[in-house]
Amino acid sequence: MLNVEHLQAFYGNAQALEDISFTVNEGEIVCLIGNNGAGKSTTLMSISGIIKQKQGTIQFNGEDISQLPAHKIVSKGIIQVPEGRRIFPTLTVEENLKIGGFLKGKISKARLEEIYSIFPRLKERRKQLGGSLSGGEQQMLAIGRAMIGEPKLLMLDEPSLGLAPQIIDMIFDSIIALRKSGMTILLIEQNAELALDVSDRAYVVELGKCVLSGECEVLRNDQQIQSIYLGQHEQESVV
Amino acid sequence: MYLDILVSGLAVGCIYSLIAMSYSLIFRSSGVLNIGTGEFVMVGGLVGYSVISTLTTNYYLSIIIAMVIAGTVGYLANTLVFHPIQKRGGQDVHVLIASIAILISLPQIGALLWGAEPLSFPNNISQGQVNLGVTQISGMSFLIILLSFAIMIVFQVFFRFTRLGQAMRAIADDRIMSQLLGVNNHKYIAIIFLIAGGLTGIAGVLLGPIYYASYDMGTIGVKAFAAAVVGGFGNVTGAVIGGILLGLIEAFGGTMVSSQFRDLILYGILIAVMLFRPTGILGIKQRRDTA
Ligand SMILES: Nc1ncnc2c1ncn2[C@@H]1O[C@H](COP(=O)(O)OP(=O)(O)OP(=O)(O)O)[C@@H](O)[C@H]1O
Ligand SMILES: [Mg+2]
Image (cartoon, rainbow over all chains, first blue to last red):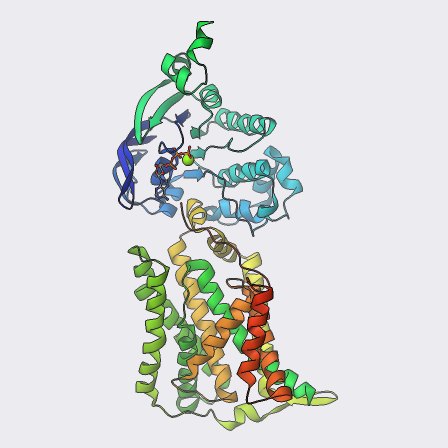
């Protein structure tokens, strides 16, 4: 479905991505894991067409989308929930949701109710300004807002960032529910354990390069991954 | 007497409000601080004058034509100047200097086309009185106030309830996120320049009959800019409040304290407001524009 090859990206003169290649097949959850500054968010912003200084190929369903403007990429069905959620602070919860379906024309009550049934908390707060929500509520709204646009590929950038454990569980439950409904998802996480649990396949990004990839099952047992990303130090694994 | 001052202050304040809204609409959506906004007012005033003195005697028609022409000038300023500069990596200072170029060059073009003499609108437009039961007020002021309030209400409704208006507010909040949801920022920012230009065009034709139209009438833009800042820069409701406040301070200060020091009083009060509320009455809203 999504095929990225030898992607390079730049901020001015600084090169942020050197060589990123990966594939997401229909119906899969694929995750990119890696440390701070590895280039995960830059990868998503490049796919979404926000970062324009880039080289390499980005194909979506066989079509080259690397030169398209951001709104055209959304209309192809690629929607991103960016890092930090970026809720519109002066729009109400409901207005935020409606903007999510901007390209769908008028959003019906029934469609809003579908989202509210997944995140009932949003319904309670629907008249409240986006800026007044808690972090967890903002993440629910950000995911709901993306879903209203009926993505074919949903890209989530660190949905667990800064959230309490129960909220993270609930957000990840909703991600699992989404995948059961057939959604294709590209997930970014620093919390590798969480990411490997819900995903089918994973790519490890370091300093702007994909250095490792494989089935999550396999990666979870990989020595190197365990020591660097899963926080299990060698002493522990010896015991 | 107080009523007259109130009405004329309110009328002039409404004109400031319309121009201040233009400043704020443009700034909030595109990040452009268009110092040349006042010159769009001049375009409106002079075009309105020409229309009313040659084409038609219908004042409303002259308002509409001036609105369309000034709107077009605003639109072109964006497509030919501001947007290309931003797209090629120009920063705020570069955009600012381009808008200063507009501020300086448009009046020269105005003088070239309409001459340097102040041009008076026909007297019959500004002479009428309106009966308000117990008292009479200037018909021109009445029209300005009525029309301005109607425009402001239309804007509130548009931004609150329409899909397009909500998308424009989304752009104003976060210019990256709006694109990530499929909003074509470039297109809607162009429309905002068109609307904002149109607002200043209306302001120019409303201003013409109470003063005159001339190539240098764009200096009103400075006061309107001050109004926008006092109200809370980038905030459209703030622009309305700031404009009306300025008009009233100016009218009462000028007639009751000293007409000679009218501007001194006005800007003195402005500085005092800024000292107490540096971000303006309604405050500045943060706009995100980086990835
Ligand atoms: N706006 C920017 N301007 C310049 N350099 C940037 C910018 N944003 C990111 N970078 C640089 O690009 C590199 C990749 O950053 P990116 O945000 O993609 O990392 P990340 O993997 O998402 O990290 P994190 O886990 O902290 O979110 C880093 O070296 C970062 O400093
Ligand atoms: Mg990141």
